[in-house]
Image 1 (cartoon, rainbow, N blue to C red):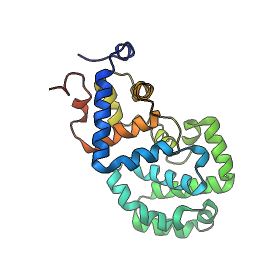
Image 2: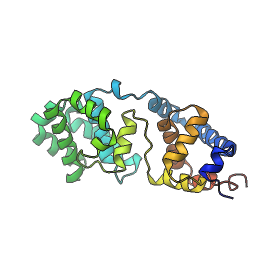
Image 3: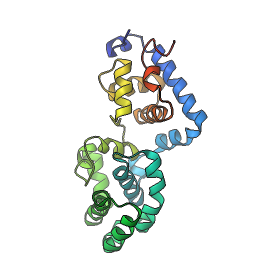
Length: 225
């Protein structure tokens, strides 16, 4: 029997919470406690320009690619962009940075997007960028090069905003658990366990990357078999 959001709000989430907490234990056991802690500590007011550039580049590279591939590419990409420390420095050296980055990863659209985002930051100033994110959240992030309707939530979450990325893993988990959206699912779990929605998001997402049967685990009745 599928559990609807309405049923969950009337006291049915005990089984779901048990599955979530078990999933979290499994993620920690696999060595990803640091990732949960990292997400819990992220706050936009603590993000500096370099972190914003790095998170933007990570998000651009991650679109359509496995995390393991991006993790391998990221250090040399950072080196190509002079450590992704200063938007102004990248802008002043954009031709050389672009050339070096393309030698690492020959995807012109993504490399150009990283250059263009750095130029947006250099032209506006990071404090202006931060203020616009505070005022417009994902709506502003969607205006950045190569940041789309889903990747904007990825970037926002990594910057510390209380959002849920509706990627394919969380969409499948939400559907299996009987919820209309990943946001509804994560909000309910968040309210019950006292964790920010973005932390619930990272636990569910990481669990899905580690265990191929994750959909069955979150389907009421299936996980008990």
